[in-house]
Figure (cartoon, rainbow, N blue to C red):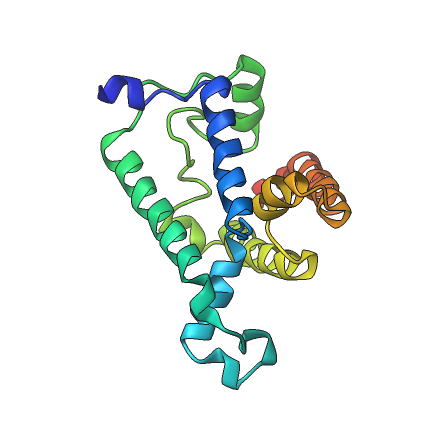
Length: 188
C-alpha cells in the first residue's frame, strides 16, 4: 500500500479530485487560497489593532486554517513515511546544467542542500533566495490579491479576468527567475 501511495497520482485521478474540491468550495461559498491563512493568523494574533487590513471577522476563515494545518500534517507524513527511495528521474541535460550551477547531486533529493539548508541560509546566496525571495513572494501575493494556488485554481475556475492576468504574470516571473536570475544567484 505504501508503494502505491508514494507514486505520483495520475492526472485522471488528481484532476477530478481538484475539480471536486473546487466544486465543493464554490457550493459552500468559499474561495481556495493559502495566502489568506497568514492574514487570518495575524488577525487572530491581534494585528487588527495595528492595521485595518487585519481588522475583519477572522472566525469565518477558521476552515482555511484547518485546511492549511492538514497540508502541513500531510507534508510531514509524506516526508517522513512516503519518501521515494529512488533518485528523481531528470534528463541528462538538466543534471549537467544544475551541476554547472553548483548543485552537486541533482535528483538525489527534492530540495538540494546547496540551496535549502540552515548552512546555506547564512550565505549571501541563501539569504537572497530564501529571505529576499520570501519577501518578494509575500509582497507579490498581497499586491496580486492572492497566491498562485488561489488565482490559478480558484480564480480561473470562477472565470475571473484578474486571476488570468495574475497567473500569466506568475508564469512570466517564473520563467524570468528560472532562466535569468537563478543562474546569476547560484553563481554567488
